[in-house]
Image (cartoon, rainbow over all chains, first blue to last red; front, side):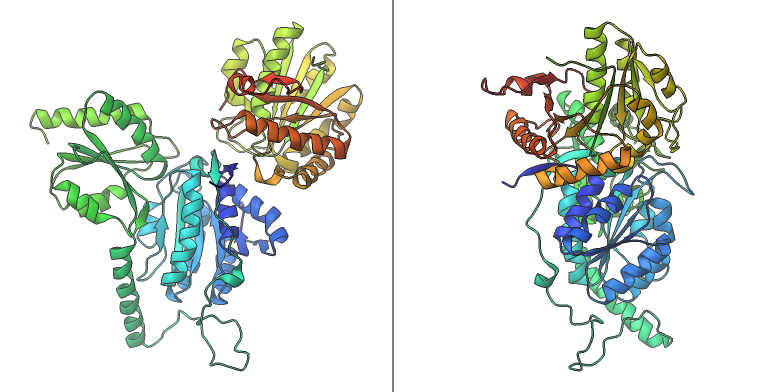
Length: 359
Length: 220
């Protein structure tokens, strides 16, 4: 077993990125994500990498675009308002089929919002955010250890599918400290060579071009269709989720990230009273693990989606369930945290509705 | 036996456990010295996890909390309350400074440099061997001098507060002590105590001769 260290979520992402062979971090400080940039600032120069505090979030994402085009593993990080600023660059990166990792330690919104953790950026992360036909891989860890593991996975999968990947955490996850174990570091030179990268022809091969501008619509349509064929493979192969006590469940709570941890406390209390409650925790938000919801919908009485938002993932749960059973929602917003007791009461309320024939 | 000075300052890396140690130290001072004790929440770097979170606990033990009016309000405002001056003006009370993490966190100490230097103060380097940046002696020494430079003050001692939160074992504290000894040798300052929760400290072997400071109360 590897040694355990005590780390903040934001620092753990940074260390995991460096160990994944990332040597380029471009960012701009924002609470509650700043420790990510601070860790990179201290450690990148010592590990042969570059930390650059850009003049803005827009500059930072375009630096990532450049580094990714040259074939390097590159990262940027921010929190909600800063991620909004990056959307144009993200769309360009997706349009140019480039891999990179973007970290969003989300906070309450809209607008400048609050500095407390929030899950109100689900739509932005999974439904585009930027313009055009594209998706990003979206990983939503629920512990500091999973932040480490998913950061490594995000780099690998981004490279494999040549597309941007996002780590979607929230302020709470970024700020909390937990013991973590790290994997052995990979040096950038040991990573698979990217034949498409614009890293110099050496007068030995044809030029590679990184571009997202296609004035001939026929070509752009063909490229978009090809990209969506790739997305289809991803939707089949890459969904990740965790299931707890769903085999005999009469009601299943759907929650991701920090909300899932809170929901788990509520579920423990309910189980101890004999209430048959289970949890499905999506770990990838795109691709969304729709299939497991469809399968469980065949026998549960209801789903309850719990989020720190006004209700965003609940729409994907409803699409997956296809009306086979009701999908309820409970959430807090603006940086407020869902409390276990409130989830406990909501589950009880729904089950009472059902017994009264109310669902 | 610990010989507390009137003014003690706790600084260190993020996650070294400054707040946990400061709050317990302030309450211990109040109980053993039978004098007025003030705890100064001097964190202007991070709006989360700070000694203001322990406001009720401190009040219950008769410790005065001095903190920015913005502390815990989710408003980021790196301001220092003027009330801090009162602990220098009142030469009788004990004052415990819980400083923000890292060298950036130590910067506001410089604002009071002349007042600290006007009397005999303690400034502790709180060390957690389980934090990656202070895992090696080289890393810890780098942090040590960065913090001294940022604060404009000189350290007087080292505190071994090695921990992994709920997973801490006596082994961690012993490893931390070895690191603290190496840092002590290189910077010429004593190890004042090793702190940890009472159950973990009980697990230390009889042969362990270092001073122990139990963290009886939990802040986070």
